[in-house]
Amino acid sequence: MTITSKGLEHLGFTQSEFSLQDDGEGVYIKKWLSKKSQPSESDITTADKQAQAEYDSKQYARNRADEYPEIKEQLDLLYKDMLADKGDKTGAWFAAVKAVKDKYSKE
Image 1: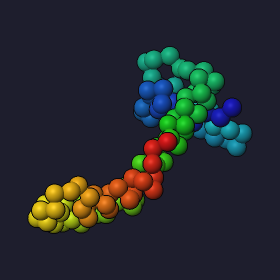
Image 2: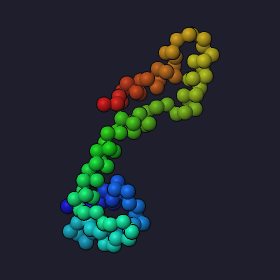
Image 3: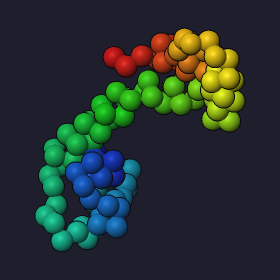
Image 4: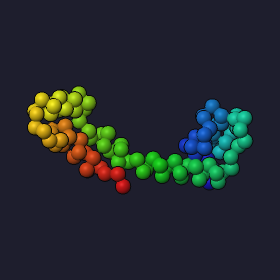
């Protein structure tokens, strides 16, 4: 097993509470600086896997953030939609945002 800072952070520790080192045979805790007790390697490995699963489950949100129109463009579209007096909710801003949401739907 290899210790990861991500696993320790997922368990609620900050990087100021531990020091990791890798001498070529895997990462290990060089110094434990926390007042809380040191977790086991298996607890850290489990926490690392949980953190990665949570990160992976939010991929749709990262994809959306990359593809949404810039805020100033969205505000301009929204303003034009409000002026259009169409009475419907499928104006240009709505269509632009909905296209990205549809492309990267929550699973």
